[in-house]
Amino acid sequence: MTTLNLPEGMQIDAPILPGFDSILTKEALELVAKLHRAFEPRRRELLAARAERAKRLDAGERPDFLAETAHIRRGDWKIAPLPKALECRRVEITGPVEAKMVINAFNSGADSYMTDFEDSNSPKWSNQIQGQINLYKAIRRTLAFGSKGKTYKLNEKIATLQVRPRGWHLDEKHVTVDGQRVSGGIFDFALFLFHNAFEQLGRGAGPYFYLPKMESHLEARLWNDIFVMAQKEIGIPQGTIKATVLIETILAAFEMDEILYELREHSAGLNAGRWDYIFSAIKKFKNDPNFCLADRKNVTMTSPFMRAYALLLLKTCHHRGAPAIGGMSALIPIKDDPEKNAVAMAGIIKDKRRDANDGYDGGWVAHPGLVDVAMKEFVDVLGDRPNQLERQKKYTHIEAEHLLEFKPEAPITEAGLRMNINVGIYYLGSWLDGNGCVPIFNLMEDAATAEISRSQVWQWIRSPKGVLDDGRKVTAEMVRAMVAEELAGIKDAGYQGSSIDRAAQIFEQMSTQDEFAEFLTLPLYEEL
Image (cartoon, rainbow, N blue to C red; front, side, top):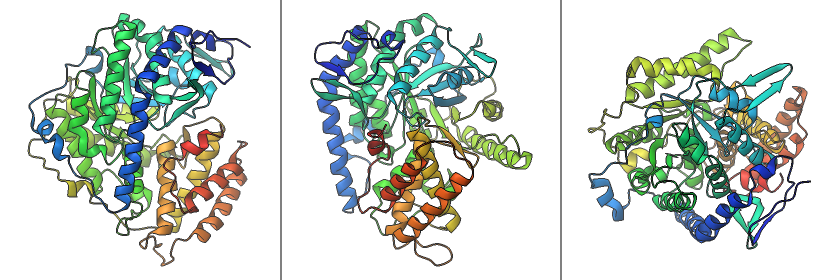
């Protein structure tokens, strides 16, 4: 096994497989260690602040726009100009960092590819480091993949790369500095930046990122300060790094101006990360007896609180000269059923047409087969323009009450409950087996959609409004019985993974236990 020359104070407790040493160089790891020592105390303070805020929300506090930052919202400022490579983002494709996906996404015809070390990726050590190797090779056009006699290679023209590191709440458990685990986000970011920034700049792009799961502008400030130090350390000009922030927590929705302001020299706009946003709403108001959302399939971008969030994001971005990128439609092509496929395509078209007509500059898809469908909707509105930043929503007025109008509340059905349980078990099993992006019931599921499933079940058990449309109250006993039934159905359907029984145990425990676990992935990660 390969041994590494590690910086002083760093330990890696994981196998160093062939090729890993090309990424885990002493120089790259020194950047990880330096950023950790400089910023880990602040990360921990911000996570503690999250926990305190959660307690206040549990006690009945309701979020509002911050009085202390009103001057930023009123101020006449804009983000720094965008680089040419990020001006046109009509369709962005997303997916994990495994080689075949990387090649197919780059070749998909999308304007941009957000490669993912986060929600669509199971953060096994081998996935994280091999993912870095895959991106290193792809940027240099040397990545190839062979399967069943077929070879996958990169086309001459490929999508612009954006990288999503892990969120602030996730550690990289295999790497410690001075006896303390490093942040998963800093680890992913620093390794990628160190190895690829100059190569990307030489090819007419740059180190571009997507930042997930932030809950406040102070968390954005932390990323900005990391960018400043990292650029200085590797010797690239300040402002070279650009980052798009996913607004996928309900608390961040009240601080969109402030988040853009903190990152204004490094900002590439905001994205409406709809699935985590729904999960966030359930999580933050889980104890409110008046809060209870309907079946997941009925909570759409046209639901009152989601519509308010989408319009506010659009207005905020364009007012500040920043791109507004629409979120993910989880629908995927259905090869063997033309009728169901037609329904799925109609859903994609409707979703992207609404975003384009509203003024969004682009939107996400999860499958290469959807790029052309989504692209047509944006091109029909934009024509030859790369974006529609000039479209202002001056007369859109969104108050706190609009962001908190949590409807629909009905129906809650047995079918919806069973779907949540089935998706939760199936996805957790796949995640434990190393796959973080899974097609289930003709939808592309990742950690965000699995979190909705788990949190809804937990909340329906406890909410007085958690009543099925046939009059039955959702109870822990009902859920336990359905877990056993859905697990048997998954097995009967031929599920191949080895972790499905453990997944069912975890889902049952996390959806019926008294205490709500902040994230599925936190306890699960310890089992990888």
